[in-house]
Length: 288
Ligand SMILES: Nc1nc2c(ncn2[C@@H]2O[C@H](COP(=O)(O)OP(=O)(O)OP(=O)(O)O)[C@@H](O)[C@H]2O)c(=O)[nH]1
Ligand SMILES: [Mg+2]
Image 1 (cartoon, protein in one colour):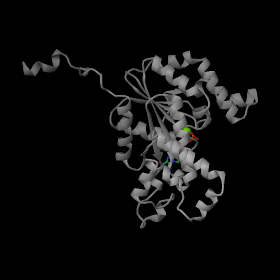
Image 2 (tube, helix red, strand yellow; image 1 turned 90 degrees about the horizontal axis):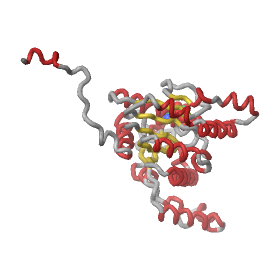
Image 3 (tube, rainbow, N blue to C red; image 1 turned 180 degrees about the vertical axis):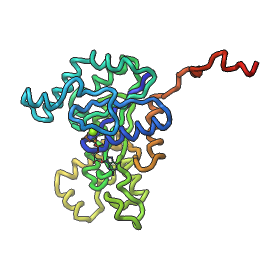
Image 4 (cartoon, rainbow, N blue to C red; image 1 turned 135 degrees about the vertical axis):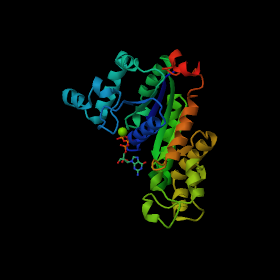
């Protein structure tokens, strides 16, 4: 059985860094994993991708030859990939019983507007692979409740679009600290555990400002208030989104995230136990 993990999320959320850490973690656990780069604009990272969209089409070439900008060029690259899926099939052909980690680009419209990733996911499922997706947003989103809820809504929209088992991840948790003593290390602020949990399991009431506060007065005076109320209602009615915290400086945190990904794909559930490859009669000569 082959397994595919699509690593998605907005620009700079830490997708490529997470892919590398996951690769290191899987290799340390002696599991067979390969990186698949789907970002035609990617810089080279720590791991050489086993499959790389840049071998099929390169963004600088598209921009130069067709005169597209970076976003239009990226859309063109993905359209080109979908028209040339036999290239991907051939590249995937050599991998059996492997974990394939797909590092996706950061253009948010790829997840919310375009049918590319759903088409790709359906294709992988048709090839007999188990597919799951992770959606990363970074801990800095917790700094601003409006930014945070826009992240929640984009996660919800991408999730509904993709229709595969899905895990939302709050990345860069090393930038948040719960202790006021080492406040300097927490670039994204000091927060209590209770406060963090209101973000990991989004509490729609975060959007409702304290009565009498300046924010509340502006919200009450504007259409903003009605919009917020509608968003609160939407999130309450569809409690689909919650986040797993990811702190790459802590191996336990990576292990927890990986075990959730394994679980969504039922990793290894129906593998047959393997015979050790070098076991033959000669190995037992001294026991006879
Ligand atoms: N402190 C901290 N920084 C991180 C972490 N993950 C990523 N970064 C930094 O965040 C920046 C973006 O990381 P990438 O992994 O390139 O993010 P990405 O989502 O792949 O970005 P795009 O592919 O451009 O969308 C880099 O400067 C990383 O060093 C993390 O867990 N903690
Ligand atoms: Mg990247």
